[in-house]
Structures are given as structure tokens and as C-alpha cells.
Amino acid sequence: MTQQNMTQRRGAIAGIPVAYLAIWAAIIAVAAILPAIPLVGGGTFGGQEFILALPGVLFGPLGGLVAAAVGSFIASLIAPATAYFGLLTFYVAAIAALTAGLLMKNTRSARFWVLVLYIVGALAWPLVPAFSSIGAYVYAKFAYWPMHATALLGIWASPWAVKQIRTFDPKRVPQGMAVISWTAYMVNHLWLSLGYSYLYPEGPDQWVFAFMSGIVPGQRIVLTLVSAIIGSALVIALHRAGIRFPDDSGSALAEEDEEVTDVA
Image 1 (cartoon, rainbow, N blue to C red):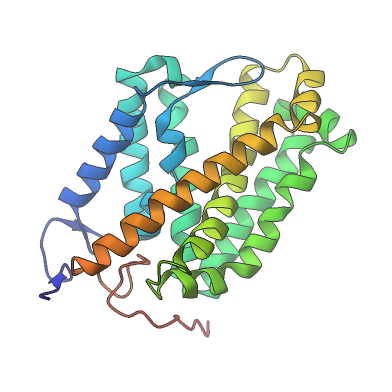
Image 2: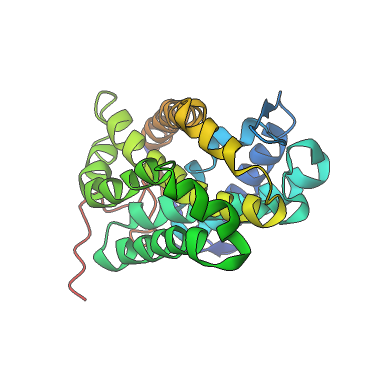
């Protein structure tokens, strides 16, 4: 089968053709008009929430960030009911895709930046006055932080997860996709929580109930499972179709399937 090597194409971002990013941005935007799921405390999210980590897996950190941010921004225009932060909702999608892309990059420096994203969010929520009216209360009640802390395990396990994804084995890819997606959704949720705490700082008891009742953890599990299923199918299908991106793109479809070793 002839491989479609994207390395030398013009009109690319981090080696990913803009056309591919535009297609994925359109997918995210269209998914936003699918039936929305109510959020505890108000607001809704749409179908795009199930695929926010996938641009990072498919296109790496930079390409994934661009596709997710543009798609989510368009989604906020055509499906405002799911734009819980208005035109700024795109930042939540961008963080999920960036996190997944950095983990797929599979270097120590990339994992370090994911850790930075995590630590900033985890400390800002209970300590920064703009957010702490919610964050300090829910953390004191032992809510959310046990779930958020699993992102640290995900970061640690991400080299193994990337290895599973790059086997392109239908039995192993979903395992790796689940780890990457869950970790991306945990970092994403931290930054989502900052936005909600700043814009809607009432009702901290609702936050605690949403966690202790299992509603929010259940939502994240469902998001991860759907992301892993869809992502696995896409990665395997595109690989079999011969789609390849530059080895430094951070994509699951990078030409070099070997694990990248970062000695910096």
C-alpha cells in the first residue's frame, strides 16, 4: 500500500496539512450540535466533548491544539447552548488536545509540560482567590482531588500507552487510548473547573454532591470510553490507509513508530 507522506507538503502546521486540521475542526463544530448532556449546576455540553483529546492523538500537540481550538470556537457560534463559557469555551478543548498531543510526543520534556499544566490548575483552584471560593471548599471535603490525582498516574503510564497505540493492534490500541484520553480529560477538567468557579462561584455543595454521588466521575469515564473507542478506530483505519505524518509531529501516525528518547 502506498503511504501518503505528509512531511514535504506545503500549507502545514507542525507537519500536519492544514486541510486535515480544518476537517477535524469542522467535525468538532458539527458534533457540538448533537444532543447536549446537562451539567450539574447548569450548562450543557455537546457531542464534541467526546472527541476533544483525539486531535492531539492524531495531529500532535500543536496541530491538535489548533484543530480543537478552532473547531470549538466555531462550535460556540453555531451551538451556543453548549458553549458554557461563551466564545472562550475553546480553551477547554485546546487544553484537552494539547495534553493528549504532548503525551503522544512521548518525551520527558513533553510530559514535564503536561505536569506543569496539571500543577498550575490543581494549585490555582484552591489557592487563587478568583477560584478558591469553590476549589478550597470542595478539596477540603475530599472531593475531586482524588479523581484529579489519577492524572499523575496517567502521565507516568503514558510511555506505555503510546507504545500500545503505535502497535496499531486492535487489542492494544484501546488500552493506550484510554490512558491518554483519561489523563487529557483530568487536566481538561481542572481547567474547566477554574472557569466555572470564576464565572459561577455559587453552590459549592453542588460540586461536592456531583462528585460524591458519582455523577462527575461517571461522566469522565463515559467520555474516556467513547474517546478510546472512536480514537482507536480512527488511528487503526488511518494507519492502514497509509496516512503518515512527520516523525517529530507527535502524531500517533508519525513515520517513526519507535518511542522517542529525550535526553535533554
